Length: 256
View (cartoon, rainbow, N blue to C red):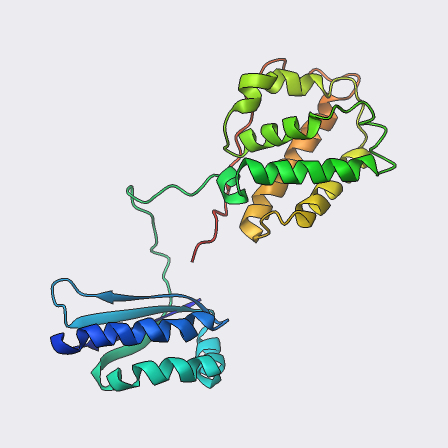
């Protein structure tokens, strides 16, 4: 990524119209596919100073793609009167010195990022529709109750940081374990389970940003492998354990 900083010196009597011009210019800027985000800041100690920060996809995309676009022409038409007030216009890259202060808000849970309980309900109702029509998995779930998709949605929602409803009302880890004991799930069945869930996620429009999907698939891979191991005839899984709590891992949600 590349950051562009434009520093202005604007007189007090021009400040209101300058900000209004940038409010208009913001519309074509936001429409540019090579602009990730931007902000206009005003100095507190010296109110005549303004800084525009723009996060571009790359230097080349800014200088070639944006500046030859209709969006640039509309943008520049609004801010043209203030070009002479520019004191600096430069591009910067980030260094390795980055961090987050103690006052920064925590990232959202995977549960909230996905869309909450409603998103997981849609996901697992669609998933079990696919399961019922699948030759490999339909026999495994032949005795499935009508409430089963809802219960699995509660479990996964709790794992991803949602309310602990599965623990409170449906027996927590011990009950989930009991559903797998003795099932002798095969590797092929586990893989089909994962594949159908990914299909269902796309069918219902579950968030598809890479950071969320990476964390989502990470749990699904881990959880189905644990379930497969626990289902084998000679398995001796721990009888008691907390419901796992899954987070973002190495890739928190991308919020430019």
